[in-house]
Amino acid sequence: MTHVPDATAQAELVASGEVKAEELVESAIERIERLNPRLNAVVATMYDQARAAVAAGLPTGPFRGVPFLVKDLCAEIAGVPIGEGSRYLDGFVSDTDQELVARYRRAGLVLLGKTSTPEFGMLPTAESRRHGATANPWDPTRTAGGSSGGSAAAVAAGMVPFAHGNDAGGSIRFPASCCGLFGFKPTRGRNPLGPRYGDIFGGLIAEHAVTRSVRDSAALLDATSGPDLGDPYPAPPPERPFAAEVGRRPGRLRIGYSLRTPGGQPVHPDCAAALDDAVALLADLGHDLVERDLPGLDETVGAAIGTMYSAGTAWVIRHWTRRLGRRPADDELEPLTRAYLEAGRGLDAGSYLLAVEDLQRFSRTVAHFMTGIDLWLTPTLAQPPVPLGLIMSDADAAGDFTPFPAVVANITGAPAMSVPLYWSPSGLPIGVHFLARFGDDGGLFRLAGQLERARDWNHRYPPIFGF
Image (cartoon, rainbow, N blue to C red; front, top):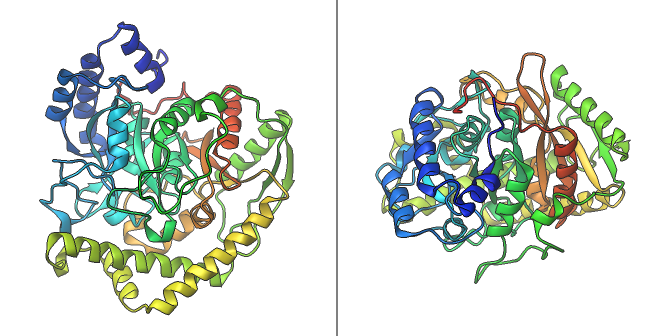
């Protein structure tokens, strides 16, 4: 198979006149229509709007004419239904673009539809009663991860070169690991959440994307990042464009690594092998590797995380109750959502603020921990992609699948990434996870670029692939 162009290369083809935007769009539509019956990654299409946008003339942004998909969670598109994986929202149509979506349009992207998510993004798999299960292109009996699993499956299968995702505890990075993609969670406040939201879940949520190439992720973040008017806080300004970081040498880094899970959950041998492989590669590249376990992630922090998710679920339902003008019926919410909702309703304001205090104290512990190292490395997940239906039917399975603390990046607001360096003997992708210091998105892109040059994963394609 010839090398499939990434989004940057596709934009260059359009800019040079070698390919027309209409051709890229129609080709992507054909792939979506052909592959989606097998993967169930795209839950709503907007082909007519996409064709109309191309016919009207696209902005001369960095991704002019490149097809794109938006995750059906938080990111609202004017005139397009938003469902967030829930029967409760059936029939609701957004009346405005999220600021991030507006920035996608200004970058020249052509929006083709929305991708699947679990109900309100609350599971590490893209499975819901509303839309069913999204399959992994590497093995359609297994999860594509979540909650941005629809986007990850679509990109891995070649429907589009990259797609939107958001992340409250690993929801960009988990599906990137499952689908063999690069998944980058930016520093808190790097991308806007307005105009409707200031922050979400007390600042846990970050918006960005899953991509095949590192340069696509960096260039897209350049196109979308920066504070919006009225944002509650900005991210530290970058030293230079993120796209310029990808080709720069990262220098000799001191990288801590750990295979220990906070709860003592077992780690699958393939995931342990992925960490060993990454450690050896980084050492070969001249970095210093030191074994370091993260301190402070105790039961108090775990309880505070649970409080934030429960309170967040109660907020989600209040938000939609206000917008829809009615409460959800008993059969319109899944059992997990209902359980989180009831727990959230049982919290008082003091309990919530105590949880905020505990997480902020933990953030300081992490900041001190990171003064001794440049990055912290773990497997992204403790298991390869698990069979579909397992997490939906077994509440404990989600915790066993995701015991490594990807949520630390959300608690602290620090940037993090999952990098696809390893495939298991059975052919399943397994990512490794890097946590950086707050604001050091550029440092992550420098290392990611070096890793991509050393171990280019862009030539690896799953059995279900559109080209």
